[in-house]
Image (cartoon, rainbow, N blue to C red):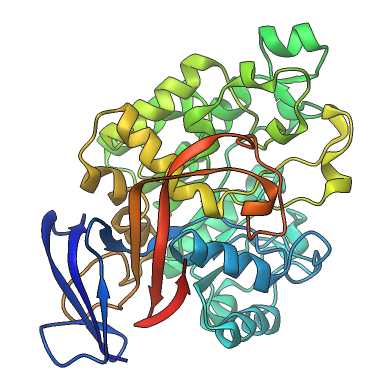
Length: 418
């Protein structure tokens, strides 16, 4: 279908464009002006590249009782998210080419958002034997990760980075010293002490980051640090980038707005991994995302069923739904930092596209026509009945947020209309 999107405010962070105008789509790509089959009037709306979420669990295969691929893809396009990178901690784990191929085929049949599988770094995520990364890459994996599973053997990690560096495969890791974090469920601070919750100290992250940086210096492997949570971690990554190490990093959207004080009276919706940290950590993460020490923001979408959340805080399953809240919470962050809208949107468009190594996230002629059209002023109340995700678990239940998607296009096809 040939589509003309008329009269919108077109924001393309990759090129710096922010102007009123028209956008044309033909044959699944951004086109120069031409004939059209349909006109979308975007008057009063923002026309942006589709959002790219580099950490969203779709729960298939293996956890369909928590969410299905179909429900989470519906949630993605309703939130303007057109590309998703999904971690390998499914059941079975994404450690074999056949499983990766099955996931990609299933996602393609649904014809909604694009799905980019992250392959397992070790077999069954057990941290003992390396996977056949070359075969997984041929099957469609864009990077390799342990998700939230530990890799306690530093020699195995060293060998993994050597293997990845040889073939220039990116490795995505969440930095946490599992011995120090063992048994912890909240940030090790005043709030956890008052609530009687076992804590995870900030240095569980910084010690792991330091170890990884030494291995990166030795191997020159490309490593993406997933979901930083501490001020110390931000400073270490800032210094590593100044040094010229091949590193990037992201932050979960919840950690930009919340801190350990938001746990309130044991709110299980605030049980996250990594945990919500102190207020100074939250503020440092926000500054880091603004100044580029942190490259992009992700939803860390982790749908959990009611049985997993309706438990005492320490026993509840960590995670929160986030695909549909990525845009409004990113806009809220940008507004609080008084940033230009183009810079705010870059953190969920062109910046994650660069990390993934994909052509999306920009409006250049010939680029994939993944588009989000949204009203930045339209508000909605976060409530279970308003979420398309099968997971209704979010710390933002009851909040009024601004930023509603009106239409989402993937490869030039309209996949969502409000």
